[in-house]
Image (cartoon, rainbow, N blue to C red):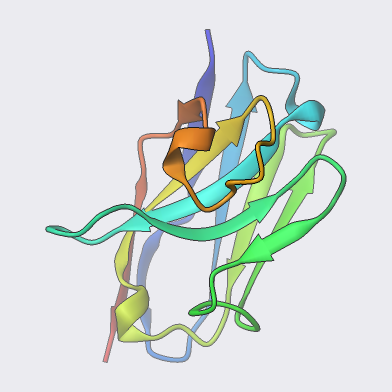
Length: 124
């Protein structure tokens, strides 16, 4: 049984930082492409960042330079370090795992498994 469990969300002030974690089980973690997406009520799920098993990273333009995705294969965990947070970063953040990399890292359809989400709220 595959499980992705996010943690680390919460309430933070503008300009602050948070680190999200996603612990995976039931998959060969080191071979999976891992991603982070977010969703605001009433909007589509939005790509945030992806980290391939090779170490290659991709970021949405809106978070580039502020967010960093990383992974620890010994802990089966992927992280999202979020700095200089803005009110528009407020969303539910989801971790996702893709068995195969198709090139469409920004598309939710590439990912096979999803976590339950963790709320991030940036207050001004």
